[in-house]
Length: 489
Image 1 (cartoon, one colour):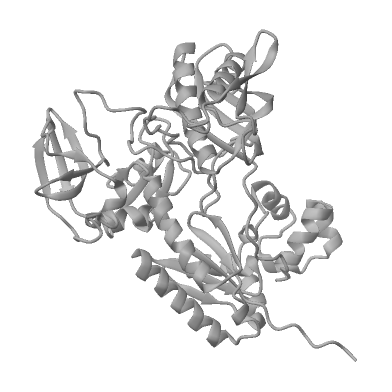
Image 2 (tube, rainbow, N blue to C red):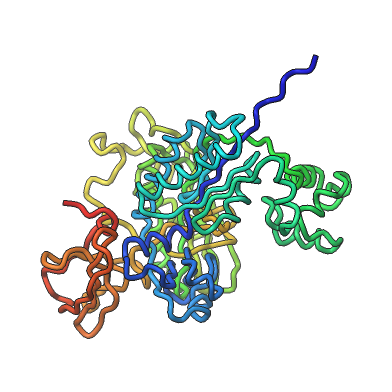
């Protein structure tokens, strides 16, 4: 007697549409329905996000900003506001967690879920669930989201892409072969430019053509492990579980400089800023690190990395900074430095019980006491560091999470064209969040010659008016980006 068949499995993939750009359009309503590019403005800046209105002209994520601006010269270009994106992402994940106990976040703007209540449901029930989920996300955040549903993670991911923008697609089990077959083979996870070209050379351009091949033939082209798995996915067989991702094995940050650094003093200063960003996230995670790695890339793209591991895990900023500066001295060669990165790994959840950190000495690594009242944090307040503003695709193991297009997104600054505080003669820069007691919350559209133009608006107020003010106006102050979404009291 055969065992009863398992109930039909339904996996959902929710993807926020053009997330970074959509947040900017929501919180700066004048930009709704206009082309928007989010990213760095320097000569080496890269697009972190592009609105659909900008994509029509060929601009996209991970593209050099200069190229994107040439393709869409009328786009509004803004620096990233990662604290705001993170806050809205948390709200989205909260909605998803309430809808399903089985949730797998993929990045700040997408996640898989597998609601147990949908096991064995018919497509109409699943469609209603997806509709309600999208409505809940919009109600909580004000933003659109696309949802794809299928028998596994692969089909769900493809379905959400087909549903964009702001749509829902449920791929019934009986229909998935017909949906997958005509799609480009590059639509499958794991097939990149190299493997895609290898398949193209033998006339395999679509998922259906790949599915029709013999498994041994695919394995011969793509390798046994990869070829077997991709052949299964092409046939709609995907039993990978939806499960929470494990904790990150490293914390890192890097920046690409507009002009190469040629002095070690400048390198040390930049390393200090990058380590401060890494340290903040290390402390927020409640962990301490044993290993520090520094990466340096020259102007001609020669990359060197140096690592050092201590006997004791540390979360002391001075210790990590000293290690990183010393490693930078060894990693930086002749010529200017185009990129610097710092990574920490080898984590412990807590520093040593004796509250000692490892510091270098003439006798090797020795223990140095840490003030128990600060738990390894700096005693005095540290200015919020400016973090990297670039997307780095070839990061050699470093780098931040990926966006929906596979581009690595580094946490970015609140200013588009430089690090650190603004110069005294130029206190405001495009994209800054500001507040005025009479006009409310706004954002800087431009500044110069002692004047600053601000558009006063938020997601709550709707499109607002512009005002040109004296740049030195004492009533114009910096504001929390979150207030452009949900204004505080």
